[in-house]
Figure 1: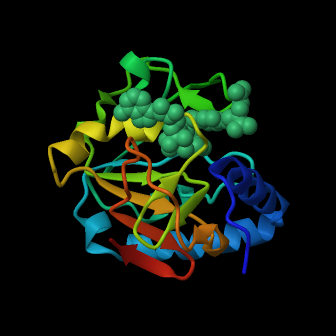
Figure 2: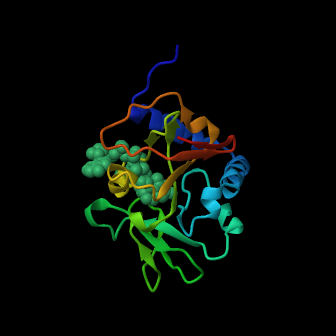
Length: 196
Ligand SMILES: Nc1nc2c(c(=O)[nH]1)N(C=O)[C@@H](CNc1ccc(C(=O)N[C@@H](CCC(=O)O)C(=O)O)cc1)CN2
Ligand SMILES: Nc1ncnc2c1ncn2[C@@H]1O[C@H](COP(=O)(O)OP(=O)(O)OP(=O)(O)O)[C@@H](O)[C@H]1O
């Protein structure tokens, strides 16, 4: 029987495994996962979508841009502008300029770019460290996605649809769900798209 890991230990283990994945393998698995998502009606019908810029071996959602439908707009999370440590989402287009946030992740400068609150998005692709069979999500430990989508969850709003993007090995049997954890609506890996 395998030992039950704490969230801290699990984060450490999966982050190590992810960073050790060869670049080509990261790309192959990310593209396969994104292909499943791009064929889904939830993607085709979304107008405002959030993705993220992958760092330190995270699954890469960016090939989704090549599958973009007319009228779709893509947004990236920004920490620095958020009130009460919620994320805001700034449009990513040719005019977008970037600077690194405190975690060394590039984020858009506001400039003349459009900015949306979490509730204004249709589809959000979330980064994650691990997820389980019920859609419980373990992130980097900042609680940013949990805080940003708490209102949606407690008011039982259908939007935005939260999809975790990951490599297959990031799926675990069971994660302890904390009171503040906002579950995913779906996950997507190279193995396929799963709704919860
Ligand atoms: N690519 C990407 N963008 C993202 C996230 C993410 O997980 N991935 N976030 C998801 O919320 C937000 C940023 N949250 C983050 C929280 C912690 C760390 C992190 O590296 N923590 C270090 C400790 C660093 C420190 O304290 O200085 C660590 O875990 O070792 C990174 C991002 C918004 N943007
Ligand atoms: N709605 C909330 N209100 C207040 N604090 C919150 C809320 N949601 C999360 N937190 C705080 O955020 C901290 C980190 O949460 P957790 O470890 O679940 O983050 P995570 O989901 O792994 O990170 P992230 O979403 O940034 O990827 C927790 O200690 C918790 O106290």
